[in-house]
Length: 110
Image (cartoon, rainbow, N blue to C red; front, side):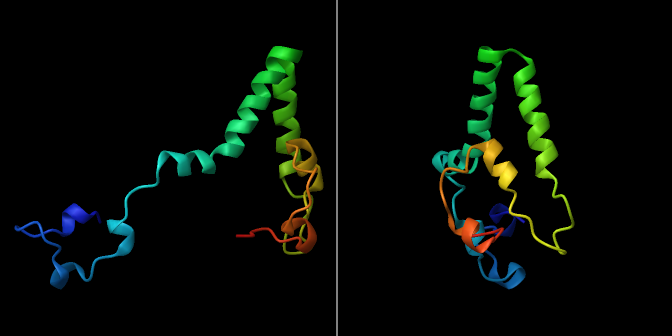
């Protein structure tokens, strides 16, 4: 429910009908910079694929995407033994640094 649906005739939030105001309804949408930061991995991959296409031909981006899709699937169920996905890090170029998830094998690190 949007904030405009919870306003009464005087353009004030109707607390009796809709409860107290929620913070997520009053906050502005994310800025363009935040959206860019969320999509930086996708933008890097697209840039890498376009460079490969101009340098090596049309087959190279297809091959890279095929390799990424084949290694993105875990080789075994995650509840049996979690995978570190080292091969995925190598293909995406994230194997040069040691991060927290490399040491603790954590999937979601804030």
